[in-house]
Figure 1 (cartoon, rainbow, N blue to C red):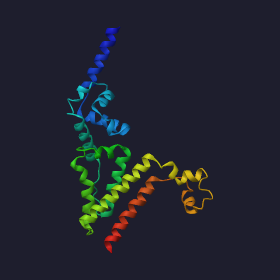
Figure 2 (cartoon, rainbow, N blue to C red):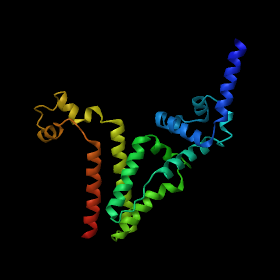
Figure 3 (cartoon, rainbow, N blue to C red):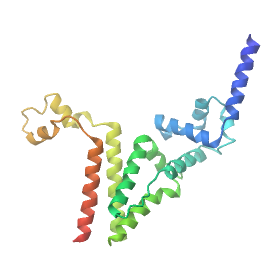
Figure 4 (tube, rainbow, N blue to C red):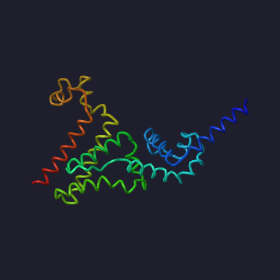
Length: 221
């Protein structure tokens, strides 16, 4: 019986190795990225996740850096930041909606892109799109770049809040629920927190529209 178990185990290991490919490695690396973050994504951890030896992975990736670079490139190039909409405002909105969407689906992507020598050149696609759209209305390159970073910081901030949730002591809804706000004199805060339901989609669209409308009006003056 021990020989039979050994045979099955060996057969299973060979089957696992035979189905390895770079695309499968990247797909499974993405699972670990979403679960544990880029810091925990190593060749050894990925090999354990796949049930193979670390050496089996080196047939498809050179090292951890190659793995992270491949993953970053795949995530960016699979995202659809561009739009054929003739309206410059809608093109920018579509771009940052996509950025928000990919960051919500893959929370570790921001830290991954911040890793040295990992982000692909295509990461500048959303920036190019935004600067080109704002250039259509005559905005200077410097102001266009400032606007891009404003939109990026707003989007990533909203994503971080949605993923993490509010800080307990700073959440007006929680303060209202626990009775801390009652009779405190912050009547407008109480009124705003009263619905006790926060719609992240509506909040994002509100902020995006405020920024875009403000840029349009600023340029028109």
